Image (cartoon, rainbow, N blue to C red; front, side, top):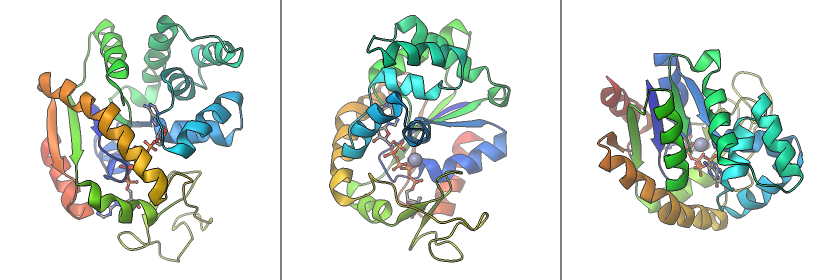
Length: 242
Ligand code: AP5
Ligand code: ZN
């Protein structure tokens, strides 16, 4: 299965992805997680990405692509260009995503979480998949009202190295502030506050919502009632994918 999970911040993409990934043996590619890893590594790329992410703005296509592919040969080539301040060519962009999807763990399919986030990203992705003779099977739209999201975002705590996330009220860890599996401390994302959330929502409505229409026109879109309880959302997702 080749899937895209799309939805505003806090809609549950990152919560449902690991469940679906295990069920169908897919790889989970979250551009947000990859960008945060690049930020943690304090590379030029990471520092550039951090600026946009801390404000809740979108990161430029070139940075996203380089972060996604930072561990591939093509990714390193892109990084070289970017570190010099040069632009990454479209050819390189397409090659990079292609290469990321060639990874053995992505052979059975993938979940793209938080990508594509602009129509330009969606078009690039389409071109790339077309050349491979494949396409996207399904796009799940985690539809939810903005008013529910502040409580979800401000209560989220994550385990940075694994990406596992908790919620103080909706999905509390066994011991407050501590990861269930490793016992390591949990942290809050720098962009998880009410003020930055407003910018992230604005970016979603203006730049990402058109991507939903883009896939609706291709008849691959399914809407998920993302305001329900986590287990109910899981059943709805499973139904959509069966
Ligand atoms: P990214 O990391 O993708 O953040 P996001 O899109 O804002 O999404 P979130 O991770 O906040 O939400 P989620 O849907 O995964 O929620 P979760 O399941 O954790 O991107 C971060 C930044 O990176 C962007 O702002 C941008 O700057 C940059 N970026 C990333 N990709 C990019 C791209 N392609 N192009 C350009 N820039 C890019 O749930 C949230 C909380 O709610 C958790 O605590 C959870 O436990 C709880 N919860 C989940 N489901 C439920 C439920 N059903 N009921 C109650 N609580 C629930
Ligand atoms: Zn997420």
